[in-house]
Amino acid sequence: DVKVTQSSRYLVKRTGEKVFLECVQDMDHENMFWYRQDPGLGLRLIYFSYDVKMKEKGDIPEGYSVSREKKERFSLILESASTNQTSMYLCASKTTSASQNGEQFFGPGTRLTVL
Amino acid sequence: AQSVTQLGSHVSVSEGALVLLRCNYSSSVPPYLFWYVQYPNQGLQLLLKYTTGATLVKGINGFEAEFKKSETSFHLTKPSAHMSDAAEYFCAVSDPGNQFYFGTGTSLTVIP
Image 1 (cartoon, rainbow over the protein chains, first blue to last red):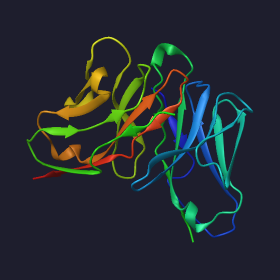
Image 2 (image 1 turned 45 degrees about the vertical axis):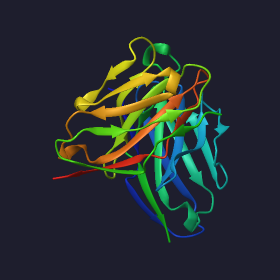
Image 3 (image 1 turned 30 degrees about the vertical axis):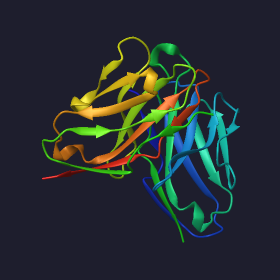
Image 4 (image 1 turned 60 degrees about the horizontal axis):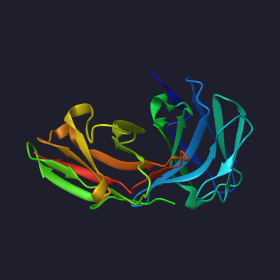
């Protein structure tokens, strides 16, 4: 079974703090994604990575950065957290292989509150 | 870019009644189609997916969905709702470029 883990389930930070959200997958997937989920807006793509050290902006990259130094790990960084970044953050991974037909596998999510 | 529309952000059904969650997408190229379920404070779990072949797809927990190309739809159904089906459901489309597009979700409430 593919397993995607996220470092924290719940996180409370203060405005202006630097925040790191970590995601690790154990299935050697090439592609990894960070989404944020807000009521009524569904999932919105922040950044994705299709290979080590590679990153692409998604739909809402402002205020975020990412790091992928190892294939299994994809980090989301909030350089200076703001209250409007309070949200649920979901990490996902996907293989490039056609064997899984594009399915994304999700982690349990991190609910971040910025005070 | 593709778009995915889920009609009804909230749907309520009685226990034992039919569940119908609607999903329409915009695509000129046959995409991959997915339904995910999210239980409270959890990540998304795949319910079912359509890639090629039979247009009626069966998934976990008794759910199924039918791909209708002419209607660009992929509605999710379950003949008889159970209390444990209460959750948020997301329809998603993956295009040949592997970009994923999600609908805004439908929250299903099951009334005892």
